Length: 503
Image (cartoon, rainbow, N blue to C red; front, side, top):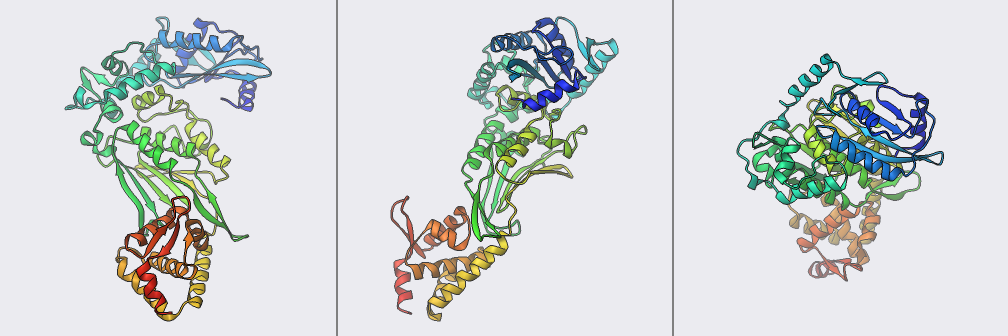
């Protein structure tokens, strides 16, 4: 959906090289305009709006929209990256056709090639047609369109291809109406002269890393900072683009809450990164990464106060970092891959993915995300709330330490230190060991505590405290009591017996 303010701004600006108004749903006139936009920079066609920007409206807009969609998909060749929406303004309905610049120019409608000159739709000249054909020849040499020798039909996930074919029809985005899976691949340029392309391997192979090891994704979750040796998670994920997307989405949906501390009220505040924003960031990275090099990488790093998605590649020359937080044209690095993702309804191909990321973060009350481009890499950073959590955490930990030291004897304290040092190996850093000792000391004083009580006492997130408790349980320093819902933590009976003898 488009905001009414955005529509009003478009109407106020009037027709341009990327905007055209149509007062009625004349298929021929609309087909000419859509074809022209495909052959130039893309844009929008607003149906139900007069040439001077007055809203006329369209009756029975839903049916008209479906008929138009079907007509354009069937009549424009090759396949058309377009999307439809019905917008309501001034109690009237208008149809908005969103058109991306085509990746397979020139596009033909009604046996003609149309072009956009300023705010006019015209038939392309021979010089313009030659330019479009030349650009397509260059694009055909792109890495994703090169044949990958050695992969066979049996190496592809037939079920996934079939589901993609079905979804493309259900989304009314496909111009291929047959049921043959290999013809479907051929139709969208994923087969060339009987061989499957690199894009096809990325999208549909059953064992993608076997053929293209640079397709792997690495997730690293840090307990503190990148210099911290104690990792919560460090994992390499494998699979085709859709398998990786599913694995990553499952991971972020279970990422849970993070915590920071209010520096005025000494209060722990939980927050979550907006799932929709992370999903957009992930699918963008998977689509736009540079797969052509064996050094290509995509990494997701989760730190206490930020989440970073970094992928090999660079922004298109036509796009600057500052453009990412506002509506912009889409310049897919891998147009064939992006188009299949579009067919499945996962993107709209209009350059709004980054805008959505920014909007979702603002709605969640978080700082705006940041993008930066370094040598051979595009980095998206999701920021947690601004806080002084590290300073507060140190203060609170010191308070716990003082409480424990005041309540137990030196002999007990020494025994706790020895127990942790003997059980936990040197790979665990000193800061974590220090916290484990304080947790044991507090459990000795209180006898039993819930996970939430321990979190609040030490000012750490749920994942951190769960990791601490699991680590100490594995080394027989603590035990669990109660059900999953009422679980509490106690010191191991043998250890507590020893400590009580020293009181």
